[in-house]
Amino acid sequence: MIQADIKRSKRLSLVLRHRPDSIGLTLDDSGWVDIDRLLSALSEHGTHMSHDDLLRVVATNDKQRFELDAPSQRIRARQGHSVDVELGLEPVPPPAVLYHGTPRRNLDSILATGLDRRKRHHVHLSGDIETARRVGARRGDEIVLAVDASGMATAGLLFWRTDNGVWLTERVPTQFLTPLDRTRGDE
Ligand code: HQG
Image (cartoon, rainbow, N blue to C red; front, side, top):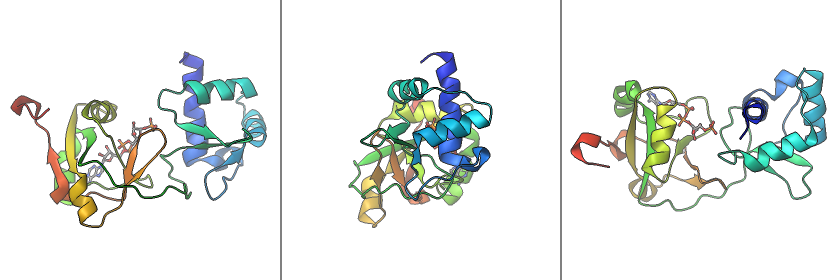
């Protein structure tokens, strides 16, 4: 993705996940907003994005963060919101193990209290170690935790999977978490 599109993607993430009010918009209950309204609100707030720019950002986005509705009139973020939206996902059975990457400095706190969703609606988990490692490494020296997803499911905890492959759950209690130690050959 070209640099200017990365900037556009970040702007869209901010508006569609966290601060629609920053450009005078509200999202509907499922997080959708009309594309023409979005583009004119952005323009009124100093960000000029053409319809083609927006379509290209949606199509080429590295994590497929956004989706369009069938007639391509509305757009929403697929996950990661802090504003209140109901994504309409159905719970699905998880694989046996999922992974969560985090900066190493969070480890003691996570092992003491479990994984919390913090500002987002859900805890985000990955299906593979490499993706989890990249997520953790965004903010420093990372550690990957294995999540006993089948144990959680047996305990009645729910999982959702977004269309771009991110696993979501409400929280992960400590007994389902195991830090992976590279030096022990856990990975
Ligand atoms: C940590 C990006 C201490 C948690 C990524 C994480 C992902 C705790 C941070 C998606 C804790 C929250 C989500 C506890 C949780 N004590 N720290 N008890 N419980 N944490 O950004 O998972 O580019 O909300 O480990 O790729 O890092 O936005 O979550 O480090 O898919 O599409 O609190 O965001 O995707 O940080 O990232 P975040 P995340 P996008």
